[in-house]
Length: 272
Image (cartoon, rainbow, N blue to C red; front, side, top):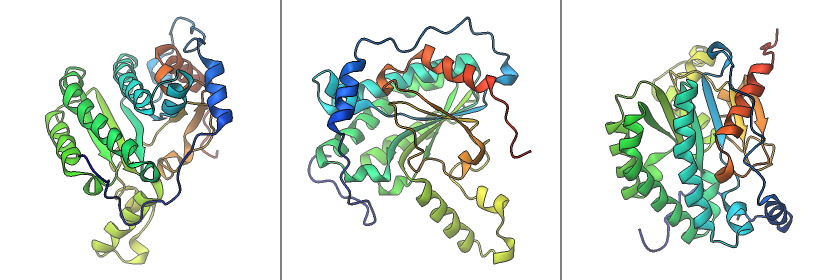
């Protein structure tokens, strides 16, 4: 995978840079606990979300605050995924969607993009057995066909080997964009020959990457920012939002439980 990255022809041209203020904020956060310890977890299962979606933000700030490389931050973030998957199984979550690589991330440097792909391949190879043991089934949301062949092959193997998982559906949003997903869904409906009057919300939902899955009940974003960033923009129409200042590598079990407890405390009306 060495050499220059071949990007999709419609990938973003903007370069994402962390601000100095964000770095200083991350430095100030070093040493803070993952979250204030939660009370004993006694939330009834029926009050917990079925589908938890997470925007895993803050890997680079976490690394900069420690004087380490960006890839060290991404590696720490990948390591944290393992614990959150295990804890999701403990809490009875049915679907866990993780925003790992957006199509906007193609605007980053060749070295960082290549490194992210290598981390993904390594994580898939090393974690497939663990995922199977946890009863997790992996699905990738995004345009896999645009990824380097080695990465696409590793993904395909993981999808095949975890196909029997029944305890937790793990969606990895990789090379994902909510707007691109809607474009792909519209193209799929046109290809199926649907007439305009046959295209409704049910038809469109059935053509999304997440077809057949419940919509997310809660979207968690770590790292302090409070925006959706083009993640599951159709599916999150009625999701609850939980924003945490904790950088993703430090977002552990207590922080995850805090989000679940907050979700259980809210009254969802769905417009009623």
